[in-house]
Image (cartoon, rainbow, N blue to C red):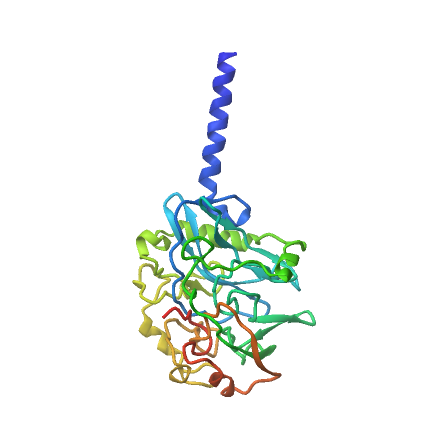
Length: 328
């Protein structure tokens, strides 16, 4: 009997140890994670160009492991099925610790803590695109899409209502975003949801395996702030203030100038950074600047088929058009 008790304790201890070990890389798989201190502020970075028709943007975020908080780069991914949209995960103050709320796929974008992830995720809903007749249409006012390659696009300009919490990466508590779910978001919460895909999970695991992604190593400015698609480390875009060339996938900011035009405009007309490279398959640079940072967004105007230049002028002065996080 005594030996059996020893065996039970050994098995239970091993199971608990395994749960702790896998929790960091399975944060998006429904594993409950709570941390006693807040995640770092959201870094400033540009968005890689969309790799192809049907890809949807997953904004970057801070995950947590035994070594501390680490950055999961923003990335373009394919949804599990047509018609689904991504609701990002978020950290929220639970009264005694910060709790991670898992992201999910669903027919509508639900509550994600009011966090300003940018690129269409300004804190409420999503204005980066919409499903239209079985195809995804991209709002080029806020996401980086090469219109010479992808033609199902439109322009819906947005207005910055509040940037007080534009850096904040958590909801509630001292210094957190004081947002609560709207009645509609609460309704969306009860819809049928689909968990992250295997590609998304592999992306999180790869982020955890990269030492330079940890906040203690990068000071909150990851060298791989975003990548074009899961596994494409050679397309890594550094955060503003990051130490580049920490690995082969990170590039110096001055190499980004190889993309002289985006949708027919010079980078200087966009009014922002060019800290990224152009993929070999794209005819336009891999990044856009500005247009990221709304804690709340509302449509300003819509036009069916935009000309290359006009929509660049509809931006508020603090948020130039298109692909860089506006935390300035």
